[in-house]
Image (cartoon, rainbow, N blue to C red; front, top):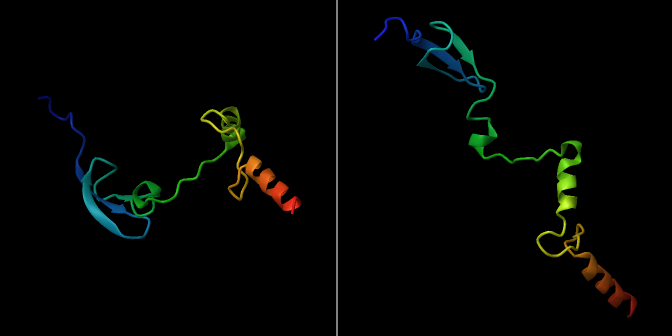
Length: 98
């Protein structure tokens, strides 16, 4: 094996976002250096199970939904109450007929 082909493996301190820290061995930086994390397992949604939010940039999600609106069956749109437009008009007709 060639000599001096592996990087220096030394002890560093890792500082988490909550202020706690621990020591580990790494090839990062210099010996006794401190690695300050911006994101760590206590704050990142991948580890905490946090909610995921879809950003609609340039209306792409809206364009997709409009394009495939009736693809899987009923082409009726739902309003905020959960009733389809045809159900709502039928119930409105019943109320007006009383």
